Length: 170
Image (cartoon, rainbow, N blue to C red; front, side, top):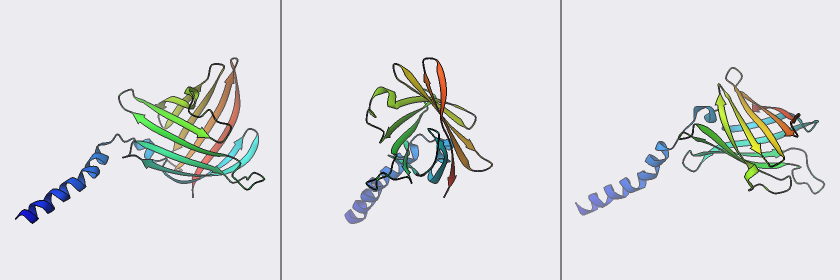
């Protein structure tokens, strides 16, 4: 009897993490972002292709995107690489995005964290700095199961296009 009770306790304790993961906040729009993608389009006036892997992490709390350009530096490394975390905060009805990339550091500064609102199947993020802003919109198309990213820089009240890319599943 003691052995059966011990086995029951072990099974119950082992299953607690599974129950905790199911209770985590989930967002159906972000579910569409998970998977493996090919990003193609124009960034800073140049045609480019990147690979993106996106998955839920930490008990379905964050979507992590790992973006790697196919273009290489002279040393053979990716010319661009980013790790992006996106979360849905139900208490404030907003998304938050942390964008860390290989463009020169400063990723953990305040301007690397954006807040965003959803409108239909789009999430519009605003990254703010003291002198400039970056408007980044993620737009999902249900009919084609694709995403588009629109990134615009704003400085001195003037908005300029930076990136227009499309994500298609691998």
